[in-house]
Length: 64
Image (tube, rainbow, N blue to C red; front, side, top):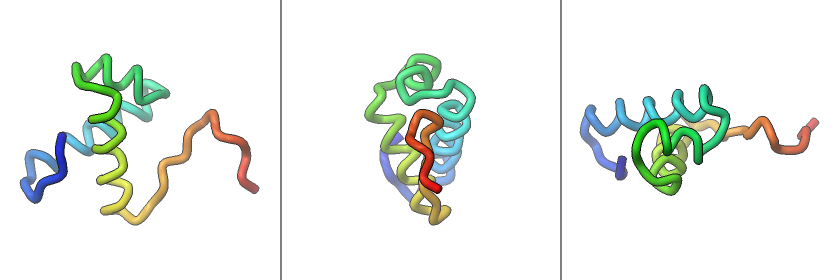
C-alpha cells in the first residue's frame, strides 16, 4: 500500500480507507486486510491528502 502513481495502489488505498471506516480502527482494518496498522494508516493518509480531507476518528474529542 505504499505511495505510488498506479491505479492499483489508488484502489488499495481506497479499500484501506473504506475498511478502516467500516472496522472502526486502523488495527481492525489491518487485521481484515492482512497488512500492518502502519500500512493502513499510510494508505488512509495518502487518500485523505489526495482528497484534501482529514480523517476524523470516532474516538476523537468533539472539535466544535
